[in-house]
Image (cartoon, rainbow, N blue to C red; front, side, top):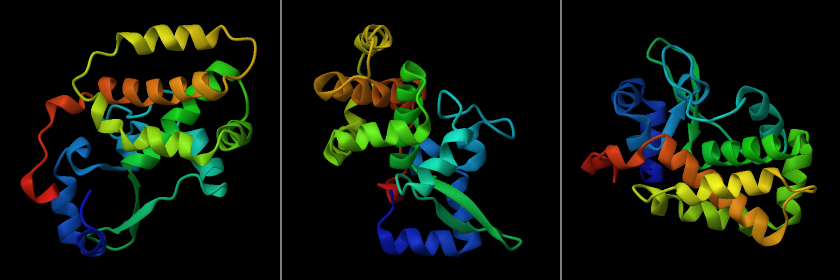
Length: 180
């Protein structure tokens, strides 16, 4: 994303934020609520019910929104791409386990915070790479009688990120030079 001082300016200046929002969210690496949830003609970025995950994940401190100033006053909620990826991971874990959001967060935390953070650090490696292995891994994990742990959980987290990147076609978007 942008450097912190430039990002703070862009979020506080309505015209700068408006200019940034004219770019594709895959280029700017943060999303509006509409882009995240698939409202106002946007295709949802997260597969699954992201709307029901946001509030509990926020309460637990797992994600934190950014806030930008609207041109006509007020604030708008924005989501850093890393937080959107975390929402996707929890959504995928919920889909294979039928656990509550809080139980999924506890399970991810029990394996150590480095598991998710390490996988998030390498999200860009999945752009343009083939993703056939992730579908097979997801099916294998869905058939497990218990929650995945250790290597199986790491594989789920990595595959969740990879499928998000493939589904949203990050390889088709060029970042403008000033966003690099």
